[in-house]
Image 1 (spheres, rainbow, N blue to C red):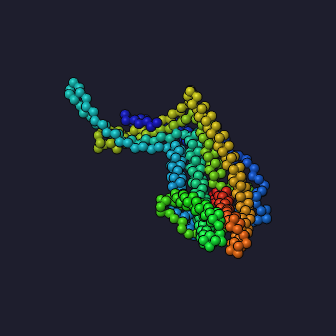
Image 2 (cartoon, rainbow, N blue to C red; image 1 turned 45 degrees about the vertical axis):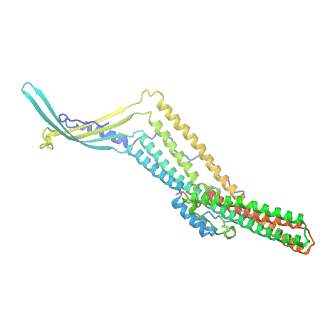
Image 3 (cartoon, one colour; image 1 turned 180 degrees about the vertical axis):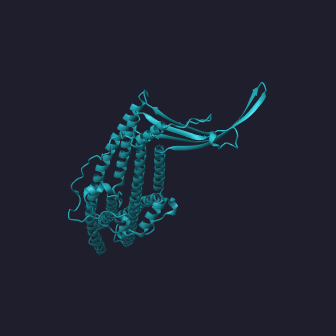
Length: 473
């Protein structure tokens, strides 16, 4: 509250009043801290990764980890998404909001200063006639709330921690977007490869069908052989439209991630065979927590809740407010600044909550409950981070082995198909054997394209689980 005086000048403050004000200021500067000191919850990390090669040297992801895949087109999509992705833009806006909230919360730790100028004119009616008078009062008013119990400081600390959490959230959102862009791009290439496999197998099946029709006309093939091959051709035709649909949907999803309209983005080149497979290996599990922005965000939220508990405790204690105002008051504007027209006032107020209908107790319990909730969230974030790495490690290992085995299956099926073709032309096997080898080859090639995508997706997940090159300052 700011007190203003426009009447006659007050007496000069006594030395005793000066000493009392100085004592209050010293008390405010040496305010008590009623809040519990923050301590990070103890969540022991595992001694080692179960899915990692113990002999491999640590190779944490770099900040531009996606460049290890050696795809210029992926690099371009990544750069575009960092500039135009809507989720990242929203996260940046939340950081600005959190910073503003921190400034608002910190304002209570500083005094307020206001300037005013009042001018009034009055007219009174007496027995001798009317009388008109004017009053001019420029004033400078100051107010300061002593943060003796640390309530305002705790509120400011909570807002600062929340702002830090917002920054970590932005890093988490960016890492999620980058991982989604890479995964969606690889899915697009996988669908292009699968569509290419389907088209090549369709062309080969159509060639065989045309040959069988010629043989039927020559009397060396029967109608059943032609019908069976025609069924194979129709089945291969039917497999193409769903792949085209999935490809278009994948490109559209990629467009949204890079902040563009679907029709403006195309992926007309590139295959999974042209994508490199970068090496990445985690260091010690104890180092992971400093590389995960989501864990840092969970802890910042916990720090903020701890400060909120301190502010809730401080609300039970008295609040002290100092106010002062000074200026001039005169009925003549010309002589307004004469020393004889100076006015000055100073006051102090103390307020002790007596009965709040359970408000303060409820706020305290709310802050404690919120802290307990965020402590559980932090614990979950930590163990989830360890679990993410373990899952990604085993996925990379197993999909790499699966890709190798599937490549062997494709090579074997290709040789069987070539042998069957030669024997079919020689007349030593019937068309049914050729159809079986043809179907096996198509299935193996399609599965290989899917396994390659699964392995690349596992690598992307591992980069993401290891923090994507982010490090806490």
